[in-house]
Structure formats: structure tokens, C-alpha cells
Length: 253
Ligand code: SF4
Ligand code: SF4
Image 1 (cartoon, rainbow, N blue to C red):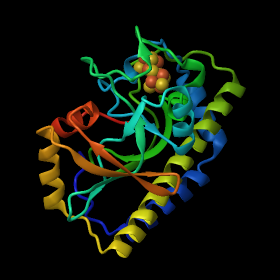
Image 2 (cartoon, rainbow, N blue to C red; image 1 turned 30 degrees about the vertical axis):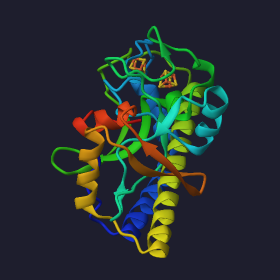
Image 3 (cartoon, rainbow, N blue to C red; image 1 turned 90 degrees about the vertical axis):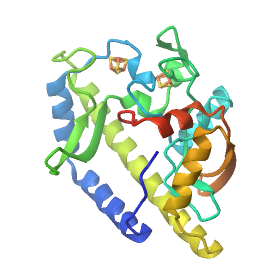
């Protein structure tokens, strides 16, 4: 699960707005050129559709609307809640695709190594492994990252048409913008909600509630969605929460 947010929420909002401004300033053609140079083609191994590779598959608001139409059982509160208040309620920024209880922790829609809703797959599934996000390396230096797990999967140096590269670049930038905008709205909502209800993040309570999750005891979680907070109870059936409490699993989409 996430470590405690030590930075005050208003500062976190400012940092995300600055991040979004940097994203806007990143030239589309440069990203398209980088996609062209990488020349990645998916080999349909299906491994990115499980917890073996991705901690969880986050859903934007529009994705939640889509998944509800396809299968209302296919999503759940995303693991790694950002906050826990002094009464023991968790707060998380959105929903994620449900994970099966199989060994690799497959996406709900993965069947025999293939996505069974491929033509309707969600925003991040369409762009992965392309991305445009800044990360700090081992030395602490912050650099742009345009690709997930380079040279660890798929095929490279394939001849991708220019219009496909441009389209992927556009979709990647659009996704990152939507994701950052979602996170900013979440923090603004939490800031208002905590102020109105005299709540605060409580790290001791957070850690205590994580132990309750591990013991299979129910906890309350408020999920940010479409401008508001929706109440859920996490029980022992929420495998992605249990796994996330127990281990640090690489990456999330
Ligand atoms: S919806 Fe399909 S493409 Fe997306 S993670 Fe699930 S199985 Fe993979
Ligand atoms: S994107 Fe990569 S990990 Fe995912 S199915 Fe394609 S080759 Fe496999």
C-alpha cells in the first residue's frame, strides 16, 4: 500500500498542475519520433494484463462508464489508498479492473492469455507500454519516461507507419493529461471533504487498517469517481488489496 503522504495536499495539487504543464509543453512530434525509433510491436503474450507486471489497471471515469456496461462485476476500488482518516476510513483516487484469484493475478477480462474484450479495452490498455511520465532514476535525477519495461517484452525496431506513431503519441499525451487531471480533482475533493468534516490523514490509523485488511476484516473505503466520493467496504474477497498490502509489486498502469 502507499506510504503516508507527508506533503500537504495544496502543495501536492500545485506539483501535479506543474507536471501537467510540463506534459502540455512536451512536443507531440518529439514523442511520435521516439515511438518511431523504438518501433515496438506487441507480441500478445498477455503478461502486462496481470499483477505479475502491473500492480493494477487504473480506470478513468470514462472507463468506469464503459466497464459498467460490459460487466458490472469487473471493477473494484483501486488498491493503494492515498489517505486514511482518524476514524479508519480509507480514501482512494478511483477504481481499477478487478483481479482474478488465480496465481498470476490476471485481469478479469484475460482468458487463455488473451483479452476477451480487446476491441473495447480501456484507455491505458490501448496505449501500454507507451507513456509520457517523469520518473526519478536511482541517482534521484528526474527524467521523462516514454516506455514501460523497454526490451523486456514484445518486438522492437519494427517499421511503424508515421501516422500510427503520431496517433499513439496523441493518445499517450491525452491519457496522461486525463490521469493527472483526475488526480488533481481527487486531491481537491479530499481537501474540501476533510476541511468540511474535520478530518485529517492519520498514518497510525492507516497502518492499523492495513493490518485489518491483511487479517481479512472489512474496512470502509471512499472511492473518488465523477467528482464525488462513493462508499465501499473492502472484504477478504478483494484480492488486489490483500496482495498490495503484502508485497511491493512493480509498476501500475
Ligand atoms: S482489459 Fe484486456 S487489455 Fe486491458 S488489462 Fe484486461 S485483459 Fe488486458
Ligand atoms: S504489451 Fe508487452 S507485455 Fe503486454 S501483451 Fe504486448 S508484448 Fe506482452
